[in-house]
Length: 426
Image (tube, rainbow, N blue to C red; front, side):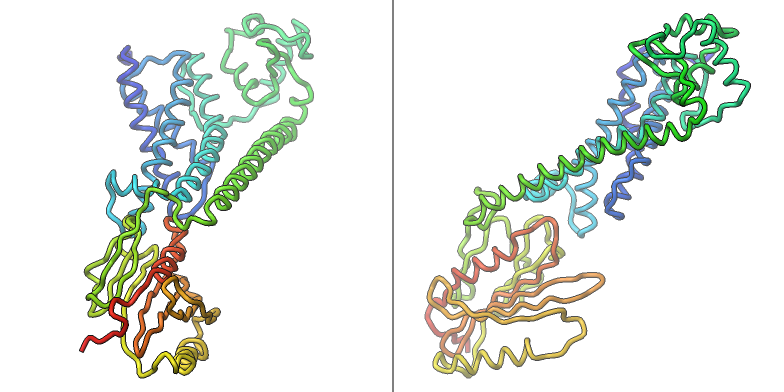
């Protein structure tokens, strides 16, 4: 006889470990397939059950509830800890508590992962429902049952069950009878057979009692499809409501931030004086990537992404042969260099002009590139001075981590200044 460990806490801990292991297929499909697949939740419940049994936990009526709770805890840990960690690794970042915390500093990411979590909870409950149903059957009968089984019903079994209900006249929900009375009509109190009909929906439950439904018995597959369709419809309506609420909250948040280029109000601006020639501001959640530094050029990227896969901003300066009176000629050179070229990977390009906060004319050149691996948009801001220029250059890879990186670059341009007027580094 198998030894039973009456310490439910130990068994529950083993169950949690199993449940987290069971989230692996779910997590991999989410991170690398960008999908949420409900059926994969089956592995979570199965692994949690295996962990519970491995610890020889007591099998009683509470076990299915424990497995449901463990499955939900496992998907919570997977969604809020494991998935963000893998997303960071996927982007080439190091993973520790600080980088994960920094990731959640971006409200856009926090909102996205929270929305996916709600959907994940719904899909988890749908995915594990069949396993939990079979588990209840196993607990009730004390016999080992394949938790993934979906057995067919023979005509002989249907006759046996129907005759049992016929003896007590339980064919309508208002004539439903207790399970104990039904079992008395079956040979050897065959609870496994009865539960099979309950799980298939032929024997229906009403106010704690049961009755036999001829409608489901005569066409069980059709009736199950109808029931499943109703369930899917309800879930779909819930998801639509969640999506609408999320959209409204997002729009409201965007409206509130129209005059604030940073989502986190705690972020400060640090002034950078580069080579004692130019100066500009960089937000505190950006760092310089020193390994990329070149003569007259500094590179910046979000703290959570030291590789530049989210986007990278460079600040540099140089000299030209054009004075401020020859601004139009300088602008024409830029147009011929960046706008009038014909390149296969360029989707679109345009040039604009404006004046920054310190009174310098700025030429903005936007180029959108089509690349299967790294599609991006480049923004070049030439800040024009007397026979010299400053350049803020942003490459935006559309990362979900940093949605306001263009505003960061724009702010650097707006505050950009030449310290001594002319650039002379000779």
